[in-house]
Image (cartoon, rainbow, N blue to C red):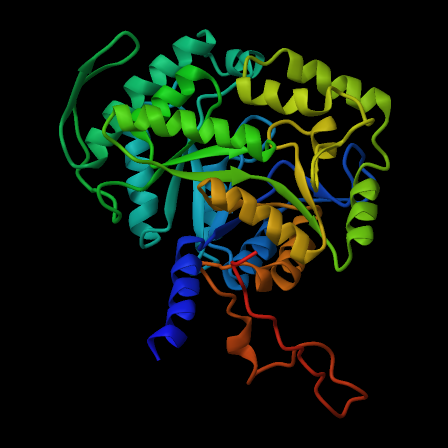
Length: 405
């Protein structure tokens, strides 16, 4: 009997270690069927954003990342609006050292967290575009911005814990900073952070809870995780890790690669040159690493098995996508999971349809921390259109998730 039970116990233990959290993305800077063109584009108005958020809320995603910057709607305003139309999903919203004071940011975070019952996650964004930052009145060098972020997070964390903060630093002078209404989550809403430069990794190791990387090939991600782990250990801390990726999943491998080709069908050399010129002015190490993956050329876009850099030809930030059938994409995600990645922030174009497609095709192959709520609706609505106005369609039996390759 013991021998019979042992394999299942081992499988269960392995399964528990590989639980994945999957987030989606709220496209407040625009959406459509194709990149680099207005063809197939759509208005990301309040109604459309609510549709995406409500899909996220019920499909099994933990929550969503909201982008930040002058090309986006304000993330805090959008998240506050969408929170009133959802019940479960969490919102990963940016605080911006240099653009807001730590005290104001702490009050904003505490208020949102209290009013939503603890559905806030904080994305610390230092910024990597000197031109955009200058437009917002920030004229610090790359390293100086991260030194400011260090001071900012020191104060923010103290205030958010309900302590009084006094810091006379090189960039901030805070005297008697405090928060009267503390957040629901203790000691404060979790801090997430992405930054690839050495100084960014040092700030992450000292302050944050989850370190994020863009979707680089597994070997590069492994090096980055190892570096941040060592820095965190030197601070007496441990961090969790997440990755930001696009995903193009279809029922067959051929269909997925065809969808990838279609996504950039209207991207011409002029659009690529314009985008690459904008990236070149940035001092973001993460953006440099993203751009280096494709070099502004269509020639070699599959940079690692099933990892495609086509998105980054004309999109800043996250520029890679996992492409393939559900089993293949799930296997690639497990490769990242084996490196220590627990959270996957995914997206696809258009974001509403792809939120459903990913949940339907990919989720059955993943060990999710959250399960879709769709099965709870079986008594109230059919899965698929009623056949000939007479009978319910058959729902296929989902294969059980296995973590043993």
